Length: 285
Image (cartoon, rainbow, N blue to C red; front, side, top):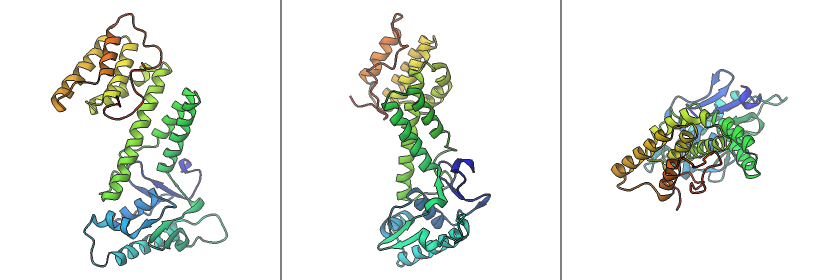
């Protein structure tokens, strides 16, 4: 468990759900307690109201005794936590202090006995962004790469999430996507176009109308001496957008196409300023 710095409880959210000590899993087998534990693990230190928990577990159609059912699920989790969080202290932690009942709901306060890959991912991404802001592109790329290496697959891949977890998962996946794009852009700025070609080929194949990813891929191809492939990629994007959205690619990426066509153009410098540093399907104009 080196990933979690020797801490005794681990929680893995960036892939199939994991929670336990050593090789012993504490992930509930039943769906609702499982989702509830995942929700607490994603929000340590944050009040989860009965209203929020009810929305997650019953999606707007709660049973008549929803509050009692939530309390029963919390009791199950406390029982598991009692045995799963024995810190190296003379006193065994009290599960009621770890998973606290507060007015209106519950708060997970695991203290030093808890760490999650999602929290580490956010920390590394924030550090990488700060490195990039001060001009340390190599340091920023390394930190973003380390953050992305924590992912084992889609977030909470083996859960059937309710509406609250769905929003949490979407937020995590969006941050993963933006971190990936930022790291690739940094690698291109550092002249590592050969190292990102395979990754960009896969990403643009899976995101066939994502203009920014196609722009990164075009730059990588051009710098690798594959100008024709870069133009063919743009033409595929144009066809897919016309068919799927009924629209043309944005003016900024069409300008990039013209730059790639220019045999005398120099794309060895950082990405052209025409490519906005945003990470949606269509950058802001």
